[in-house]
Image (cartoon, rainbow, N blue to C red; front, side):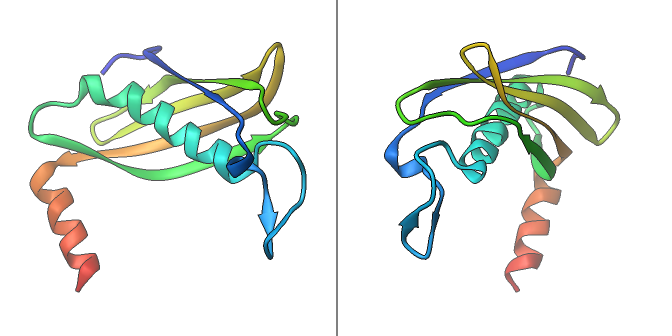
Length: 127
């Protein structure tokens, strides 16, 4: 894993991405929770090429500041950059832009474990 490694996700805001509460659309823009999903995807893409064959990542933290709207039909570019690495944690700084406008910023942390530990964590959660 290297500092400053980046990964980018590009998506177009669709009707399904609008914020809805109790079945009603609130605004014709990308919802914060859909931006959060795209942030997770970008951070995962920044991590995967650097995992060892016996390792897996687990999301441990996500923060997002939704700064500006991304209207329906517009393209959003999300870029995750690895900013911190230690023995078990990878941190990405993430930014989403719609044209020149910064739509959202945030941070995602992933914990890195051997696959058998991840499987044990999931099995224990299922009991």
